[in-house]
Amino acid sequence: MGSRTRGLLLLGVLAGGAFLASCADMLERHEPVVLPTVGKAPYGELPDGSSVDLYTLTNGTGMRVKVLNYGAILAGVEVPDRAGAVCDVTLGYDSLEGWMKNPAYFGATIGRYANRIARGTFTLDGQTYKLATNNGENHLHGGLVGFHKVLWNAQPMATSTAAGVRLTYVSRDGEEGYPGNLSATVVYTLSTRNELKIEFTATTDKPTVVNLTNHAYWNLGGPGSGDVLGHLLTLFADQYTPVDRGLIPTGELKPVLDTPMDFTAPTPIGKRIAEVEGGYDHNFVLRNQPPRVGIAARLYEPRSGRLMELLTDQPGLQLYTGNFLDGSIVGKGGVAYGKHAGLCLEAQRYPDSPNRPNFPSPVLRPGETYHHTQILRFSTRPLPHSAHAR
Ligand code: GLA
Image 1 (tube, rainbow, N blue to C red):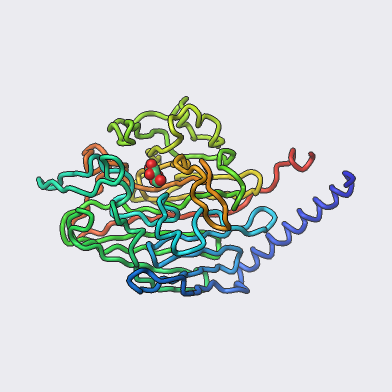
Image 2 (image 1 turned 90 degrees about the horizontal axis):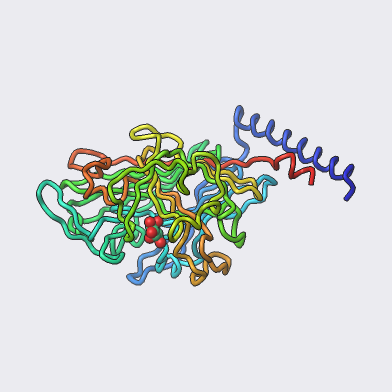
């Protein structure tokens, strides 16, 4: 193709883009042509005969989100790239059998306690509780049967600007060793502005600890696009919580400046990952602190142009770069997930907070409501000029 033809094509694309942008503006100012919808389809059966459904949220402005009532799992997030091509940017499975095994916690709602509690024990109001230990000597992601392995009640909902599903689960007193009956709710809402909001709430009838999160693995390049080492990550965090060999925080907060933990400016994930033993699996201390919802992370994939921003009201964010993936899990579309095939950004209380009085408290008491909001905001960036010229 001659450079003149390429130039004309580019103009066409830019003009098309400008047209689409003005159309989108018009649609926002007036009425959306396609209203958000929620679909519900049978997905499979659990061994006890109960049926699992897949809820598909469609916003009419380019995105689709899939949620299972099994595990309140975020089963898929379809997002357009800079050319408008839509694909799923999360790792996961095509069948219930896959989600039921799910050793890597793809898309999982994690509860009651995301991340690790040292030696699976903590003391609250003078009483010591013993939890299941499922990660060496430690308790990880809620224990043997976490919130991602139970059936939730689901209620779809749609308005003129958003489609959503509300899921509820009651975790009984003593489940996995935790005190109190805990009523948990997760609400997924997809707006016409391509924002996916995930809101967690919980109440209890006895003092307990809570730390719910979502464990989606992102690869903004889409299925089969390789690892995430070329994604550019910005974390709005100046400190992190160093860990021991068992990934339990030492209790210190250390500055990220001039270390491989420094993502304060957009940085390729792979730039200094070799200097971090095992890869990134660390909690960052966010600049924004509760109860305000503020920016925590920005993730950009240069080839597709997809950009994802994560806003939250949680004090910490775990960056986990899929270090334990080794190609043995075959997921959506038959793709084998190799090391670093996806990354997680887990908004959370700091790991092992129940044993760390200097960390923000994860304690929930009767009469209080635990709140956790995260917003995933999707958009695209155009090709930089230098890339057009090539
Ligand atoms: C979290 C943990 C990791 C790992 C993954 C699941 O992100 O911090 O160490 O357990 O979950 O594989």
